[in-house]
Image (tube, rainbow, N blue to C red; front, side, top):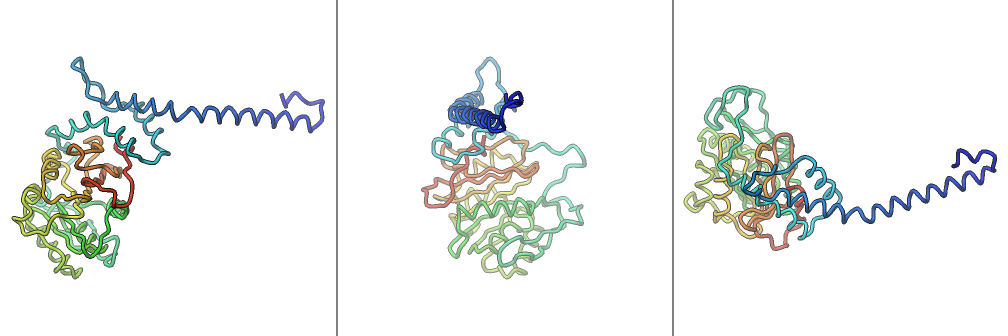
Length: 331
Protein backbone atom coordinates (compact mmCIF):
# COMPACT_ATOMS: atom_id res chain seq x y z
CA UNK A 1 0.00 0.00 0.00
CA UNK A 2 2.78 2.39 0.96
CA UNK A 3 4.47 1.59 -2.36
CA UNK A 4 1.42 2.72 -4.33
CA UNK A 5 0.92 5.98 -2.41
CA UNK A 6 3.29 7.77 -4.76
CA UNK A 7 1.25 10.79 -5.60
CA UNK A 8 0.52 11.69 -1.98
CA UNK A 9 2.57 13.53 0.51
CA UNK A 10 5.46 11.92 2.38
CA UNK A 11 3.53 12.22 5.64
CA UNK A 12 0.69 10.13 4.26
CA UNK A 13 3.09 7.39 3.18
CA UNK A 14 4.72 7.28 6.62
CA UNK A 15 1.29 7.15 8.29
CA UNK A 16 0.25 4.13 6.24
CA UNK A 17 3.55 2.37 6.96
CA UNK A 18 3.23 3.02 10.70
CA UNK A 19 -0.35 1.68 10.72
CA UNK A 20 0.76 -1.51 9.02
CA UNK A 21 3.58 -1.96 11.54
CA UNK A 22 1.20 -1.52 14.49
CA UNK A 23 -1.18 -4.06 12.95
CA UNK A 24 1.64 -6.60 12.52
CA UNK A 25 2.79 -6.16 16.13
CA UNK A 26 -0.78 -6.63 17.36
CA UNK A 27 -1.08 -9.91 15.48
CA UNK A 28 2.25 -11.12 16.93
CA UNK A 29 1.20 -10.19 20.47
CA UNK A 30 -2.17 -11.93 20.04
CA UNK A 31 -0.43 -15.09 18.81
CA UNK A 32 2.10 -15.01 21.68
CA UNK A 33 -0.70 -14.80 24.25
CA UNK A 34 -2.10 -18.13 23.07
CA UNK A 35 1.24 -19.83 22.43
CA UNK A 36 2.16 -21.13 25.94
CA UNK A 37 -1.13 -22.99 26.43
CA UNK A 38 -0.86 -24.73 23.09
CA UNK A 39 2.74 -25.65 23.75
CA UNK A 40 1.85 -27.11 27.15
CA UNK A 41 -0.77 -29.31 25.49
CA UNK A 42 1.80 -30.32 22.87
CA UNK A 43 4.32 -31.21 25.59
CA UNK A 44 1.76 -33.27 27.49
CA UNK A 45 0.92 -35.16 24.32
CA UNK A 46 4.63 -35.77 23.77
CA UNK A 47 5.17 -37.05 27.30
CA UNK A 48 2.08 -39.23 27.04
CA UNK A 49 3.48 -40.66 23.83
CA UNK A 50 6.60 -41.65 25.73
CA UNK A 51 4.58 -43.75 28.19
CA UNK A 52 4.89 -47.55 28.08
CA UNK A 53 3.47 -48.97 24.88
CA UNK A 54 0.50 -51.29 24.67
CA UNK A 55 0.77 -54.94 23.87
CA UNK A 56 0.09 -54.23 20.20
CA UNK A 57 3.63 -53.01 19.74
CA UNK A 58 6.24 -50.74 21.22
CA UNK A 59 6.09 -47.04 20.48
CA UNK A 60 9.41 -45.19 19.88
CA UNK A 61 10.61 -43.71 23.14
CA UNK A 62 11.26 -40.17 21.91
CA UNK A 63 10.82 -39.31 18.21
CA UNK A 64 12.81 -36.31 17.09
CA UNK A 65 9.72 -34.25 16.32
CA UNK A 66 8.33 -34.67 19.84
CA UNK A 67 11.71 -33.89 21.33
CA UNK A 68 11.87 -30.61 19.43
CA UNK A 69 8.46 -29.56 20.73
CA UNK A 70 9.39 -30.38 24.33
CA UNK A 71 12.69 -28.56 23.94
CA UNK A 72 10.90 -25.45 22.65
CA UNK A 73 8.52 -25.56 25.59
CA UNK A 74 11.17 -25.74 28.29
CA UNK A 75 13.83 -23.50 26.77
CA UNK A 76 12.64 -20.30 28.43
CA UNK A 77 10.86 -21.64 31.53
CA UNK A 78 11.90 -21.95 35.16
CA UNK A 79 11.34 -25.22 36.99
CA UNK A 80 8.46 -25.79 39.39
CA UNK A 81 7.06 -28.80 41.17
CA UNK A 82 4.46 -29.15 38.38
CA UNK A 83 7.27 -29.19 35.83
CA UNK A 84 9.00 -31.95 37.77
CA UNK A 85 5.78 -33.96 37.80
CA UNK A 86 5.43 -33.46 34.07
CA UNK A 87 8.97 -34.66 33.43
CA UNK A 88 8.48 -37.68 35.67
CA UNK A 89 5.51 -38.87 33.58
CA UNK A 90 8.03 -40.32 31.15
CA UNK A 91 9.78 -42.35 33.84
CA UNK A 92 7.85 -45.50 32.98
CA UNK A 93 9.68 -45.85 29.69
CA UNK A 94 13.12 -44.51 30.55
CA UNK A 95 13.26 -46.28 33.91
CA UNK A 96 12.59 -49.52 32.10
CA UNK A 97 15.69 -48.88 29.99
CA UNK A 98 17.78 -48.27 33.10
CA UNK A 99 16.40 -51.41 34.74
CA UNK A 100 17.32 -53.55 31.76
CA UNK A 101 20.65 -55.36 31.86
CA UNK A 102 22.36 -52.74 29.71
CA UNK A 103 25.85 -51.42 29.43
CA UNK A 104 27.29 -49.02 26.89
CA UNK A 105 28.29 -50.85 23.70
CA UNK A 106 31.98 -51.31 23.13
CA UNK A 107 33.50 -49.21 20.42
CA UNK A 108 33.89 -50.75 17.00
CA UNK A 109 37.46 -49.55 16.45
CA UNK A 110 40.36 -51.07 18.35
CA UNK A 111 40.43 -53.90 20.84
CA UNK A 112 38.43 -53.88 24.04
CA UNK A 113 40.38 -52.76 27.10
CA UNK A 114 39.63 -53.10 30.79
CA UNK A 115 40.02 -50.10 33.06
CA UNK A 116 42.62 -50.52 35.80
CA UNK A 117 43.93 -53.75 34.29
CA UNK A 118 45.18 -53.33 30.73
CA UNK A 119 48.22 -51.22 29.99
CA UNK A 120 47.72 -47.53 29.31
CA UNK A 121 48.62 -46.89 25.68
CA UNK A 122 48.21 -43.12 25.92
CA UNK A 123 51.47 -41.37 26.66
CA UNK A 124 49.91 -37.92 26.19
CA UNK A 125 47.36 -38.21 29.02
CA UNK A 126 47.72 -35.11 31.18
CA UNK A 127 45.65 -34.55 34.30
CA UNK A 128 45.61 -31.37 36.35
CA UNK A 129 43.42 -30.01 39.14
CA UNK A 130 41.25 -27.31 37.59
CA UNK A 131 40.09 -25.40 40.67
CA UNK A 132 40.67 -24.60 44.32
CA UNK A 133 43.88 -24.12 46.26
CA UNK A 134 45.73 -26.73 44.19
CA UNK A 135 44.57 -25.36 40.83
CA UNK A 136 47.00 -26.20 38.04
CA UNK A 137 48.77 -28.98 39.92
CA UNK A 138 49.64 -31.86 37.62
CA UNK A 139 48.75 -35.35 38.81
CA UNK A 140 50.51 -38.61 38.16
CA UNK A 141 48.71 -41.15 35.96
CA UNK A 142 48.83 -44.92 36.54
CA UNK A 143 50.35 -47.08 33.82
CA UNK A 144 47.05 -48.95 33.40
CA UNK A 145 44.13 -47.95 31.23
CA UNK A 146 41.81 -45.36 32.79
CA UNK A 147 39.08 -43.14 31.40
CA UNK A 148 39.25 -40.00 33.55
CA UNK A 149 36.53 -37.38 33.63
CA UNK A 150 37.27 -34.67 31.07
CA UNK A 151 38.43 -31.33 32.46
CA UNK A 152 35.47 -29.60 30.80
CA UNK A 153 33.00 -31.96 32.47
CA UNK A 154 34.80 -31.67 35.81
CA UNK A 155 34.61 -27.87 35.77
CA UNK A 156 30.96 -27.98 34.77
CA UNK A 157 30.21 -30.47 37.54
CA UNK A 158 31.73 -28.35 40.28
CA UNK A 159 29.98 -25.30 38.88
CA UNK A 160 26.61 -27.05 39.18
CA UNK A 161 27.49 -28.52 42.58
CA UNK A 162 28.20 -25.03 43.91
CA UNK A 163 24.44 -24.39 43.99
CA UNK A 164 23.63 -27.58 45.89
CA UNK A 165 26.40 -28.42 48.34
CA UNK A 166 28.94 -26.31 50.21
CA UNK A 167 32.38 -27.90 50.17
CA UNK A 168 33.36 -26.80 53.66
CA UNK A 169 35.05 -28.10 56.82
CA UNK A 170 32.23 -30.53 57.63
CA UNK A 171 31.70 -31.93 54.12
CA UNK A 172 32.32 -35.60 53.34
CA UNK A 173 32.60 -36.94 49.79
CA UNK A 174 32.78 -40.38 48.24
CA UNK A 175 34.51 -40.73 44.86
CA UNK A 176 33.78 -44.02 43.10
CA UNK A 177 35.82 -45.41 40.17
CA UNK A 178 38.55 -42.94 41.08
CA UNK A 179 41.38 -43.94 38.72
CA UNK A 180 44.09 -41.35 39.39
CA UNK A 181 41.98 -39.69 42.10
CA UNK A 182 41.55 -36.50 40.09
CA UNK A 183 37.90 -35.87 41.04
CA UNK A 184 38.39 -36.61 44.73
CA UNK A 185 41.54 -34.51 45.01
CA UNK A 186 39.89 -31.58 43.28
CA UNK A 187 36.99 -31.91 45.72
CA UNK A 188 39.54 -31.52 48.54
CA UNK A 189 41.18 -28.64 46.70
CA UNK A 190 37.85 -26.83 46.59
CA UNK A 191 37.39 -27.05 50.36
CA UNK A 192 35.94 -30.46 51.21
CA UNK A 193 37.06 -31.83 54.59
CA UNK A 194 37.19 -35.56 53.83
CA UNK A 195 37.16 -37.70 50.65
CA UNK A 196 37.14 -41.48 50.30
CA UNK A 197 38.38 -42.57 46.86
CA UNK A 198 37.41 -46.07 45.73
CA UNK A 199 38.98 -48.12 42.95
CA UNK A 200 39.51 -51.84 42.56
CA UNK A 201 42.96 -51.44 40.96
CA UNK A 202 45.97 -51.57 43.28
CA UNK A 203 48.04 -49.63 40.76
CA UNK A 204 45.47 -46.84 40.73
CA UNK A 205 45.39 -46.85 44.52
CA UNK A 206 49.18 -46.46 44.71
CA UNK A 207 49.08 -43.48 42.33
CA UNK A 208 46.23 -41.89 44.30
CA UNK A 209 48.28 -42.06 47.50
CA UNK A 210 51.22 -40.40 45.76
CA UNK A 211 48.99 -37.65 44.33
CA UNK A 212 47.36 -37.04 47.71
CA UNK A 213 50.79 -36.77 49.37
CA UNK A 214 52.00 -34.32 46.73
CA UNK A 215 48.93 -32.18 47.38
CA UNK A 216 49.34 -32.40 51.16
CA UNK A 217 46.02 -34.18 51.65
CA UNK A 218 47.18 -37.45 53.27
CA UNK A 219 45.19 -36.76 56.45
CA UNK A 220 41.97 -35.86 54.61
CA UNK A 221 42.09 -38.45 51.82
CA UNK A 222 41.35 -42.16 52.24
CA UNK A 223 42.03 -44.72 49.52
CA UNK A 224 39.88 -47.86 49.39
CA UNK A 225 40.76 -50.78 47.12
CA UNK A 226 37.44 -52.48 46.45
CA UNK A 227 34.52 -52.65 44.07
CA UNK A 228 32.21 -49.66 44.16
CA UNK A 229 29.15 -51.87 44.75
CA UNK A 230 30.77 -53.47 47.81
CA UNK A 231 31.58 -50.10 49.38
CA UNK A 232 28.06 -48.84 48.74
CA UNK A 233 26.57 -51.99 50.29
CA UNK A 234 28.61 -51.82 53.51
CA UNK A 235 30.73 -48.67 53.92
CA UNK A 236 31.41 -49.46 57.59
CA UNK A 237 33.26 -52.60 56.54
CA UNK A 238 35.87 -50.42 54.79
CA UNK A 239 36.18 -47.95 57.69
CA UNK A 240 35.00 -44.94 55.71
CA UNK A 241 33.23 -42.03 57.34
CA UNK A 242 29.60 -41.99 56.21
CA UNK A 243 26.96 -40.85 55.36
CA UNK A 244 28.27 -38.53 52.67
CA UNK A 245 27.28 -35.07 51.52
CA UNK A 246 28.52 -35.74 48.00
CA UNK A 247 28.93 -38.93 45.96
CA UNK A 248 30.56 -38.86 42.53
CA UNK A 249 30.39 -41.81 40.14
CA UNK A 250 32.51 -41.88 36.98
CA UNK A 251 32.33 -45.56 35.96
CA UNK A 252 33.90 -47.15 32.89
CA UNK A 253 30.95 -47.06 30.52
CA UNK A 254 31.57 -50.38 28.81
CA UNK A 255 32.36 -52.51 31.86
CA UNK A 256 29.57 -51.93 34.36
CA UNK A 257 25.82 -52.49 34.48
CA UNK A 258 24.15 -49.20 35.29
CA UNK A 259 21.06 -51.01 36.55
CA UNK A 260 23.11 -52.79 39.23
CA UNK A 261 25.08 -49.66 40.08
CA UNK A 262 21.96 -47.52 40.56
CA UNK A 263 20.30 -50.24 42.62
CA UNK A 264 23.36 -50.43 44.89
CA UNK A 265 23.34 -46.65 45.23
CA UNK A 266 19.66 -46.45 46.13
CA UNK A 267 20.01 -49.14 48.81
CA UNK A 268 23.25 -47.78 50.27
CA UNK A 269 23.52 -46.40 53.82
CA UNK A 270 26.04 -43.94 52.37
CA UNK A 271 23.06 -41.85 51.19
CA UNK A 272 21.43 -39.42 53.57
CA UNK A 273 18.91 -36.61 53.27
CA UNK A 274 20.23 -33.90 50.90
CA UNK A 275 23.16 -36.05 49.71
CA UNK A 276 24.14 -34.83 46.24
CA UNK A 277 24.95 -37.50 43.64
CA UNK A 278 26.88 -36.76 40.43
CA UNK A 279 26.57 -39.61 37.92
CA UNK A 280 28.40 -39.76 34.60
CA UNK A 281 26.90 -41.95 31.89
CA UNK A 282 27.12 -42.35 28.08
CA UNK A 283 24.63 -41.07 25.53
CA UNK A 284 24.00 -44.65 24.38
CA UNK A 285 21.81 -45.15 27.46
CA UNK A 286 19.47 -42.37 26.38
CA UNK A 287 18.36 -40.01 29.17
CA UNK A 288 18.19 -40.94 32.83
CA UNK A 289 14.81 -40.50 34.56
CA UNK A 290 14.16 -37.30 36.50
CA UNK A 291 13.24 -39.41 39.55
CA UNK A 292 14.98 -42.58 40.76
CA UNK A 293 13.99 -45.01 43.48
CA UNK A 294 10.34 -43.90 43.80
CA UNK A 295 11.31 -40.35 44.70
CA UNK A 296 14.46 -41.06 46.68
CA UNK A 297 16.72 -39.31 44.16
CA UNK A 298 15.40 -36.17 42.49
CA UNK A 299 17.14 -35.00 39.32
CA UNK A 300 18.38 -31.41 39.41
CA UNK A 301 20.66 -31.20 36.36
CA UNK A 302 21.38 -33.33 33.30
CA UNK A 303 23.92 -31.92 30.83
CA UNK A 304 25.57 -33.44 27.76
CA UNK A 305 29.24 -33.00 26.82
CA UNK A 306 30.06 -34.92 23.66
CA UNK A 307 29.42 -38.60 24.35
CA UNK A 308 29.30 -37.95 28.10
CA UNK A 309 26.17 -36.98 30.04
CA UNK A 310 26.40 -35.73 33.61
CA UNK A 311 23.35 -36.09 35.87
CA UNK A 312 23.07 -34.39 39.27
CA UNK A 313 20.59 -35.85 41.79
CA UNK A 314 19.71 -34.93 45.37
CA UNK A 315 18.53 -37.52 47.88
CA UNK A 316 15.18 -36.50 49.40
CA UNK A 317 15.85 -32.75 49.22
CA UNK A 318 14.24 -30.73 51.99
CA UNK A 319 14.69 -27.37 50.24
CA UNK A 320 17.58 -26.19 52.40
CA UNK A 321 20.05 -26.49 49.54
CA UNK A 322 20.23 -23.77 46.92
CA UNK A 323 19.31 -24.20 43.30
CA UNK A 324 16.19 -25.46 41.58
CA UNK A 325 15.51 -28.68 39.67
CA UNK A 326 15.76 -28.49 35.89
CA UNK A 327 13.40 -31.33 34.89
CA UNK A 328 13.34 -30.21 31.26
CA UNK A 329 16.94 -31.43 30.99
CA UNK A 330 15.69 -34.99 31.65
CA UNK A 331 13.18 -34.96 28.78
